[in-house]
Structure formats: C-alpha cells, structure tokens
Length: 369
Image 1 (cartoon, rainbow, N blue to C red):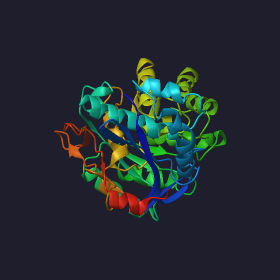
Image 2: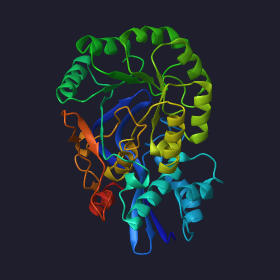
Image 3: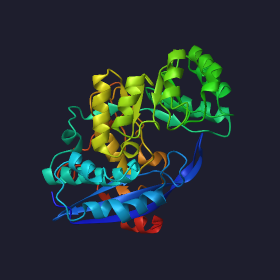
Image 4: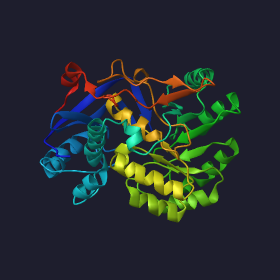
C-alpha cells in the first residue's frame, strides 16, 4: 500500500467533568489525529498522550511535532505492506510510542478499508463482542463515589476500577469494599507509590482485589517484581510496558500477573497484538486500556479487545461518558451480553468497518495545531 498523504491535527477535547488521577487533573483530553491517504481511500489514527508529560514522558504537543518533523516524512511516499514493516521503518527513532501509534493505528484503519474487512478480523480476532468495566476517578467525596459505584452495580458492570492516590486510598477503598463485599474491584495507582509503601499494599491483600494496577514508578520493572513476590494480590503493569521488549522483560522478571495493553502507550496496534501474544504464551491474562480517545481511537481499542487473551473486562467507554459530543461519528456506544452485562461490539458495517468520519466543524473548533 502506497502512502500518498498524511494530515495531522493536535486537538484538545473538553471533558464533561475533569478526570483526576495520581498524576493530576485533566479538563480536556489532548490527542493527535492522523488522516492517512492511499489512492482514493483514507482513514484515521489517533493517540491521546494528554497535555503534559505526566502519564508518560510524551505529551500531545511533542507527539505532534515528532510526527510532523520526523515520522511522517519517513512514511509519506513509501509502500508500507504491513504493520510490522511500518514499525521497522520507524525503528530508527528511539522510543516515542504514542507518536508511532498515531501512524500505526492509521495504517491499520486504512488497511481495513482497503481490504474491505473489519479491523478486529484483520488483527486475528474470532469474536465480536466483549464485556467492559466501569471506571471512577478521584471524586470530591467518598459518598459521591459510593453512589456512582452503586449505579454501576445496578447496570451490571462486571468489575469496577478505582483511581487510587495518596489522600484517596485505603479509607476510600475500604468504604467501597464494605458496601459491595462481592464486587470485582481493582485499583489504579498511576505510579503514585514506591516500594516503601509495602505495608499498605500488604493491607490491601485483605480486601480481595482483582489486581493493583501500576503501583510503582512508570518506568520500573524490578521493584514491581519485588512487590509482586511479597503480596498476594496480582500486580498489573500499565505505564511500565511501552513496547514488546519491556513486556518480555516484565514476564521474565515476574513483574506482574496481568497486563494492561493500550495501543497508544505501546506504539500502536502492531505492538499491542505482539504483546498480547507474548502474554498468552506466558499464560498471563491481558485487558485493553484506553486514554479517553475520541471514537476514532476508541474503535481501535474495541477491535483489539476482541483477541482471545483479553479476558478481563476492558476500559472501553461510550462517548457520552466523557464528551458532550464526540469528534468522530458514529460515537462509541455499549450493547449488552445475554445476561445484561455491558459490552463493546466490534464494528462490522462494511465498507466502513471503523468510525472514520470526523466532524470537521468540531475538529476545527478544538484544533490546537
């Protein structure tokens, strides 16, 4: 497939309400959108590294510049016949997984259109529907959180994820567990703690969580291995796994018993599938995370989540959860499994197998560069 043109947009998408985590607060989600063109077809890619380098060393402005100045010139005018070939062409440029994901997700979306096949099938998936979970950030009051969790339980979400940070930690978690003793719960620490906090994590063992997500430093594998060896609760890695090599090292060290895979964080769908396969071979379950992308980027997460080793409900949300109006159409919506469990459905409508149409008015309104 010959890549004829790439258009880049750095956008800031206002949230309905701020998203609070251990690394700070975001009132809008900053993404880099990529329109990739080959002949008469075009498709969109997206990565959402946020406004500041707090979740990872990358940020939207830097990703935009990296793509504009280095990655796109290496791709435009070239024949790229596979995701692996694209990754090989970009391998000269060290790191920068979010920037590479912008192009990688666009290439897969373009290939889906060219081949006239749904994206999840191109990735190797056999199913087209998976359960999803409910997530809650840091709130003003524990009572507000309890009300939100109560609603998620009523809606039959199979698990709940709670953001966890100093000042919003054990008392909050105990309140939720006391209210819902049988609910599947996990916490996401977003690198907010250190190995010195071992006594707290040992206390969490008594609360029967599904996992503790990214408790320690964003680039650490060794301390996570030590922590996992000293607590019963499974450790889940997120930020620490930014490419397949880090995934291999984490598996070798025993740094986790479950892994979160986000296409943006690991360099795109090509690498995400590779990490999924490594975990499956090691009998380590996975689940799909997200970065609050628009429907264009969220559709890539939906397609990825259909692979068989994604056995824990993913972070896939309806557009209405965070945005008054999504930049892409159709927006992401949830369906239900037979038992009423909220689920994500793989886009199957051809010849438009992924949400690929962006609202030009909103893109123009929210464009930064």
